[in-house]
Amino acid sequence: MRVFVFSYLLWLGSVCTVHSAPEISFEKTDYHYGTFKERAHERISYSIAVGNKGTETMKINDVRKSCGCTDVTYDTLIKPGKTGHIKPVIDLKGIRGMMTKSVTVLSNDPEKPSQKIHLKAYIIPFVHIQSRYIRLVVGNNPKKVDVFIKADIKDFKVTDMYLYNMNKGEDKGRPISIPFKLSSLNKKDKHGTHQYRLSLPPPSLNDSVYGIFVLKTNHPKRPEIRVQGAVEVVR
Image (cartoon, rainbow, N blue to C red; front, side, top):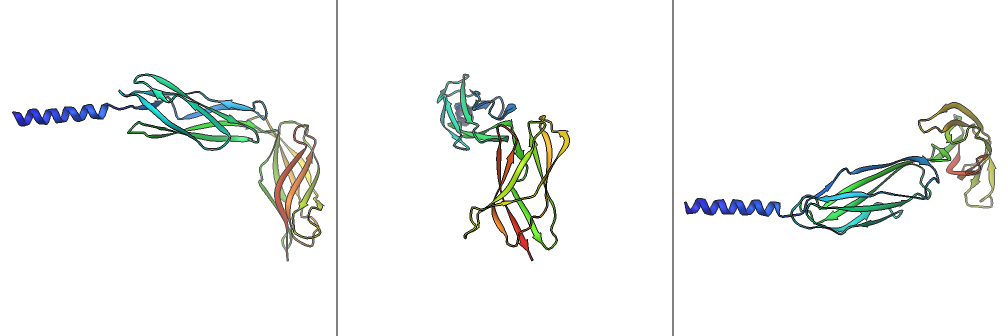
């Protein structure tokens, strides 16, 4: 009987030990702010509820950010059965298209000491070029290159295009005119932006040039667009 009672007390003590701890909880770990146009907001903020389902006070030791564009404030102590808040604020300067950021919550919850929260939004850009790098080939088997552009105005136009020469030598910095043809695809994407095709035939060059393509446009808020690229001469 003594052995049984002693074993029971050990079991009861272990149960109490397991449950005598903070327990972090979130309603969800993915937050979507919504869809809005570029520069409609300079910053966006979230208020994330964080609960404590445990029996001990929960301490949030730190909230780590995925980038320097995010500031965050938070409640450091949350009593059992209570709810606190984590409030990240994201600076949208220079962000276009789908934005995906995150914060990682570090607490004294023994089961979940680290919990990542995902923060999303879609910023409709004034003008968006789907190519991050443009490569034109001159020489053997030259081909026309199509670059697709989205714009938030219907009568979007590219008025001029050139390649800013970044090669070393006396020609560095000299703009090289690039032939082009812009045509409307006569359709919109799901965010209501108009779609265009920029066709680039191979230019007449004798040597390869690496640099930055500069597009001049009629858009009042994006009169100039820059994309890294090159014209490569293949013999």
